[in-house]
Image (cartoon, rainbow, N blue to C red):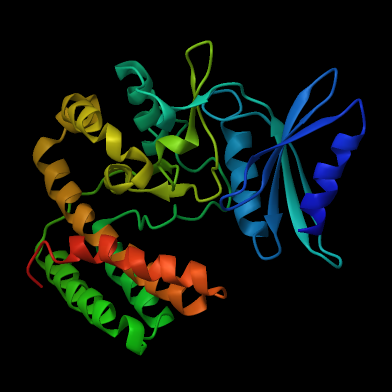
Length: 305
């Protein structure tokens, strides 16, 4: 918080104008001078890996117009450890806040799924994307890790047991289904339209690449359909998906995979919410998480376990 306050304090200088753009997960500031505008994203202690991932991916995509141009990654490992990611400012509107055109949505989905991106293997050390195991069979070990991380307590025992039963269903599907291989792509990791800007020149620029990595594009597609920021655009997204080249090229394979991920991902989210409840420090935040459990668990109840 001290570093964030110091960034804001720059605004007392007449030649520098600082604006807080976002403070949901990381604080993001625009820093404007008479000559240029930069974006400074603050990562707290413990988030160095996520900052490095975002910088790496942005550097990789610098010539594609799908991400802002990275400028510098600044790390301080002494005292109040933090990382600052500095990038060029991209003007534009968040696609969550208006009804984007068919072409803009198409660009956004292709960006989230890594379609039309440079080929795999070019970013050294890049891990799998967040909650994307690259293959359906990888969901089971992912769920096992999440389950072990959030041991049940009285206030979450019912939801924890429901998630465990759903995990058994995942295990059964994984062992009996003959999954075809699908080339991993560079997936965004958090495919919400709140993370996409529609620029004045008609380009689509994705932000917040900190959860990006290699993954199954079908899994990323399911995450986009489940993402809270996309819910008012679901009819357009489904129509776009049904007619996209990616889906038309493999209709049966895609439908099986997509149906699987649409049920498996909410189980992951349920385990994560339970874990966050256990570690919530302030009561108001904890109650909000408890109230949101029904949203994740309702999807678990949609199928037999």
